[in-house]
Amino acid sequence: MKSRILFSFKLSLVAIVLLFSCNKWVDLPPKDRLTQTVLFSTKEGYLKALTGIYAEFNNTSLYGRDLTMGMLDAMAQYYNMGDSEHSLLAFTSFDYGSDTFKSKSNTIWTKLYNLIANSNAILDQCKEGNTVLPTKYYGIIKGETLALRAMMHFDLLRMFGPIYDKEKDKACIPYIESSDRSVQPLISSVEVIAKVVRDLEEAQILLQTTDPVLAEGPLNFAGDVNNHFNYRQYRLNYFAVTALLARVHLWAGNKEKAVHYAKEVIDKGQTADAPFFPFVTLEEIRPSNPDNVSDRIFSNEVLFACYNQSRTSSYNVLFSPTLSANSLLTLSGTLTDGRINLMYDNQNDFRRSFWATRSISEEKEVLYFNKYEELISKNNSSSDAFRFMIPLIRISEMYLVVAECSSDLNECGAYLNKLRLNRGQAHMDFTSMDQINLVLENEFMKEFLGEGQMFYFFKRKAYTELPEGSKVAGGTIPMQLSNYTFPLPESETSQRQ
Image 1 (cartoon, rainbow, N blue to C red):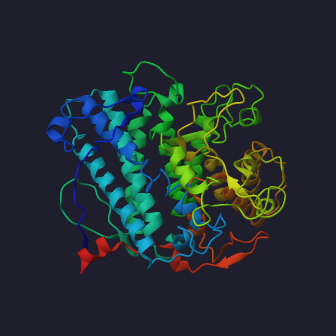
Image 2: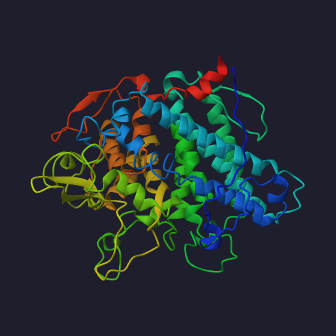
Image 3: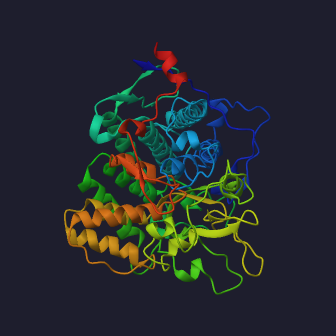
């Protein structure tokens, strides 16, 4: 059967932030539909097209909210809904027949495939014989675009595809590789993974010789507005692409390859003499200097993130204590008693700073998530260094990949302890993989709050029970394995009848 993905290459009339140009605004022509001939006649046109894809990642239905701090984290059962009419109840109860879920899944599907079409429009112009782009720009633009296409298909697979170990040969989603209007068949998870890996490997090769991140690090500083190679944390740079390869191979059960790529990221990204992505320090989280802002994002460790100037708005829609009960997300219990004590070993865990108590009425206090809360320093100053950052890939994930996938128990324990020690936790002596996996689950749950990864963890491991977010003392709810797979949107299935 075939899928019709309509190509519509379109750059929003909304102002797009050019991260390559130190956040310089792009002035678009008055018409919102730019012909490919005009767009790709200059180097700047390619950069605008590529930046347009990154900018659209910030859409609240994508990584700007639903695929990070919102819908997916709610489905991982982090939160207490607090009200039977809560706006996210359809997702936490896996009510896939509800209009709420149908509308949201259709939006996610449509937007991601539109962005994939936009990626393909760029790639169509990045073939041999391209005379517009200098060699370095060619490698960066084509490499990042291939990686974007791979990442979006992979996330579509993680949502709309089956549990890999259970039904990996079942046709599930199309992999779109052209910007034309030709129809494409649904293919299996195995085939999707093969294409994702192919695109990421090609991207890695291209970026290996062109991406300044390998020699100079993230380059997150104000500089020449015409320098298109700064702010690498907000682009799918070489380290992020390599980390994606580790993530993808882990999903597919290729543990040796997952370990290989994870170790490459760690070894090159955290060198002893000059680490590009060092672990956060307690001083950075709880600064003694009144001019410094608390870094709850652990921004130094982030390999790839959205630059989202509307982050506070996305956060407030879910977590502001001023919200009504049918909108607010909270953690069951208090700072000293309840679910927080099940998640954290003790109060020394750096990640415990993601939670705070606030009164929502004279009689009631709630435990709310504050990782993305707008922060100012004690001297009322703010910082743009991580103010708009929504992490999508971080180096700590690579430690968890090695801990889960290494065939050497001692190595598993060493990598897990390295992460724990850099989160303020005590060293543990591991005597079995069962013990490793138990701690691993808890570390994963704490590490990726607000980043949309825990639901995928549960799906990959085919958990039949999930934590019960509404219970102060913990507990579980049953999980049907079929609920891990989003049904294809009606807009897609209607074309197959």
